[in-house]
Image (cartoon, rainbow over all chains, first blue to last red):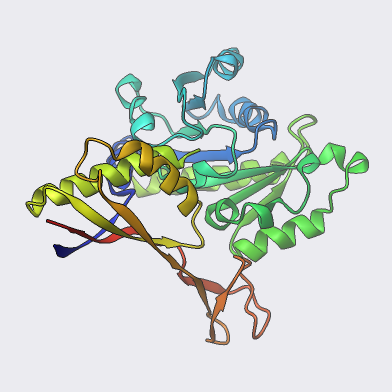
Length: 220
Length: 113
């Protein structure tokens, strides 16, 4: 019997595919955001807000990852934004190969590509899909302890959006504690407090995205 | 649940490495799994039993080498091993943390013939 060194990541093929996706997205000069949150945290509602605000001045594509169905893509298509649906069927996350299924369907250049991952705080964090960065959404009814319970996602997310702040009077959620918990996983995280229902707090978030979009433009 | 596709990748990777090294069978897979990953050795073992028949891995067992989480504080410079991934320096309380280990997820080696 012989022992041979391998020293290869189990995720090596996913990582390679993610790099290829990234090259394709970079060629289009698109800012690509991988949006991750639990089911019902308001991923689609936050995307709707972003689309409404930016759609006149920027070309936006939404890639919808769901286990089944087209509920969200139909909802977003009503706003006049281009949407590509990916159904993962048995998988609880998008991986780089599933994301690559969208590439042949992209027929123009987009400034912003928002990828709505499958609703889940665990698995999507581990799989690179070719994004510029991950954005996590934490909604107030979920509790302010979630960053400590799902540390990897909050460690890897460059941006954290605290959604449903309009419900703060009714739920046991401390913004202060939530922010502290996020920073305990990632001291560089950019945190925004919003309500996708009322639109409150989006101003700062839009300015941040605007800067990111401009930075991407300059790079390309 | 995501361990299924991950274990499938593991089996594919090991089969390809066995091929490269002219192994007809693999007996041991030495797998490093960091404690700051979302992968559970129990789930990987569970799916591995279902995925290994009729592959070069069919007689293989996985030897898990769990890697602890080690962090370095960029402010005070101290290194520490932590149980839970709460990235605060146990020495000075600052959050200026670099993760040194714990994110590993790779096949270190295989044994076979």
